[in-house]
Image (cartoon, rainbow, N blue to C red):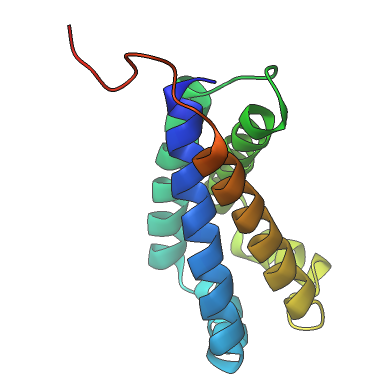
Length: 140
């Protein structure tokens, strides 16, 4: 397994676990805040830019479609982040509102939190269980 896959699996996995726990602990503020974010164009621009950069970095640095479930899941998450970032940058505020309403965020909140938590648990477990190849952390 590539060291980059293991690192990204650990990073994303732990981030997803923490995000899901935050979502579950602060449901009301989370549900109230997220729809308001898309109504703030400077914030949408900022989040879209950061997500596009992060997603593009992941896609360029880890576009692995073979080698097991972990590398493919990490790659899919990178593509998902990139596509979300680009949607935030290129969709009009009206289209963003329609796109957001499609997902019924408030009604399906616990499903989204559970998906985030399960993905985080899987990524964290699989990445910490994976063995780094010999000499992965050494410089020559």
